[in-house]
Length: 390
Ligand SMILES: Nc1nc2c(ncn2[C@@H]2O[C@H](COP(=O)(O)OP(=O)(O)OP(=O)(O)O)[C@@H](O)[C@H]2O)c(=O)[nH]1
Ligand SMILES: [Mg+2]
Image (tube, rainbow, N blue to C red; front, side, top):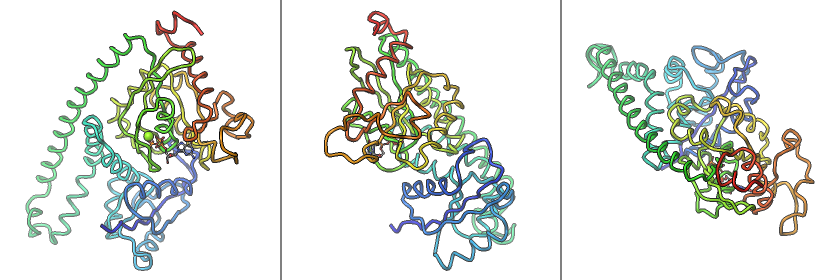
């Protein structure tokens, strides 16, 4: 199948909102392009408009919208992706004007999640998030069909008759589906919490990997546990939590959990739907924050992770930070460099307690394990640790 040809559109807002405040539109659009790529599309053009805030009716201004319409011939896009969540009203207006498929950042992320979800839990959570996203947009879909049907009453098959009734039916069905999904997820949650309680009783402390998507969490997991977890240079390679044992220098053991990565403007529906997954973080004794120190937006990514953790009420959870992919920053003649700590990294200055690692080259892992060991000894109430303080 031919890859869909996407035009990307962002607004650089002068008054930026609370979410994703420090990101500039250029970086954000770059990331949106990676999301399109991950979803299987191809970016054929980009446009950024500076506005005080996105236009309430059509996201961009009327003039810019005309430019975009005109570009359809020249660059031949068949999909337009907007870098913020569109309101149902904006979405409808834009579909009308552009006459191609219109997606927003949220729909794109939900689509990737749907593509990645493998376990029943993951699938249920994605389906819930998608249903919640679609519910307020059902009206728009309906009026769109109505228009296709021509003049109201005598439209095409399936779109005739009193529209409100059909819309009400759709909404009711969507709400019923959401209710059913929530109940199923509740079951999964209960199962998870039982499992966690059993784990807590066993006294083995839990370390949860957190970090921006593509930071190298799964690679680090693989390096520390030799587990065969999925690694890919795409966004959101990992969705479902995986837990493996790690051996610490003191001879003690802990469990390490790898899970879904964060991203700026993470759809609220996803955060809500992924409660069962995110509760893993809440129950962890320690968070291991992986940062891709080579990424041009490393500082913003790291800030986004902090903000997301704060939104989840986890800002005070004990944490160890691993600045990953340092192999890309330095020239080396094979083997691990003598002193990773000697490298000048601006982010490292902000996080003096961070450990420099290369998950890929397996550098800095001994030091990282020592830090995890020390930190666990400090924070955990696990009998295993209490019995033999470090
Ligand atoms: N050069 C280099 N590449 C790395 C390192 N660690 C990970 N990578 C690469 O970075 C990409 C993402 O790695 P993953 O481990 O899948 O990242 P993740 O944080 O689990 O990503 P998601 O699950 O998508 O959120 C892959 O292409 C890895 O090979 C490293 O230390 N050095
Ligand atoms: Mg991963």
